[in-house]
Length: 231
Image (cartoon, rainbow, N blue to C red; front, side, top):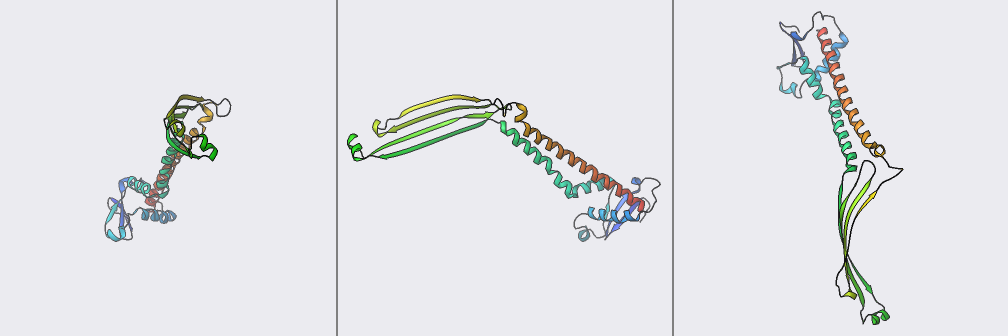
């Protein structure tokens, strides 16, 4: 329906009005195939519940507003938007392989050893030999992009047993260990290969999202002007 200053398309009680200022000059050919396709597209652009809540109301839709609605309601684009975030998480996982890790542990071990009759006599009538051992270990470890593995470790052990009247004996160790592969796993290229792949996956997912958005907007624009020609 053509009005004085607007172009109106009525769909099941709701109307979409397009300002004539958006229409190019000289567009007057009839395209029946486009009319059917564009009607379906514009129906999809109507907000949920428009038929139930917006009876008799009119919806003004410019080319820009229509493109925004298409992008907001396109399921493929909605799903595609998550792909760069997933790829970015993959990059963080690969970069985490080169993070420094802090480790630590503490153990206690109690041992009771029964003695034979002869051993009991030898140890002054003892029935068992009891011992208690503690071990505390802490340090940092990591791996560089060149394959170098390093560990700084501090360990303390102390034990007590029946024979020394349960007086503790202490042992301590502090050391720094470096391991560098000479063939397999040597060099930066072999160690960051997976990181490079993760970054490429991120770039591909971003490019795919942009391309999908451009294709969708371009398709909507063509159908928008096809509808203008139909009317």
